[in-house]
Image (cartoon, rainbow, N blue to C red; front, side, top):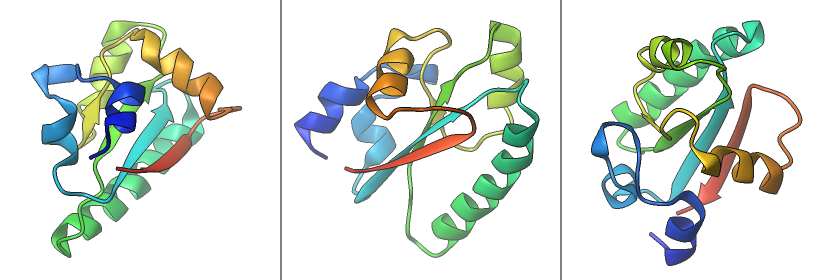
Length: 115
């Protein structure tokens, strides 16, 4: 895992996870921009989860970090509970920085980065 990735994503996530434990030896990492209120997000998330589970079953992990656009913490918690991956904490300032950096123009939006 590169120091550039640590500088970009930080090292403090939901449930006390750190970036090294999230990424491990994976060559790639995803950032998933989404929100519970978004109908197309709620349709896409199960498909992404299925893809993620398939990769894990094949021994090809793709760590994903959820970057929530939810407007309240209860919506975030409810939606995140459906996901098998990790997340930035609700309201984390890094989410907006990443939105700008990756020109997120709508959700759902998935960015794949070299680890």
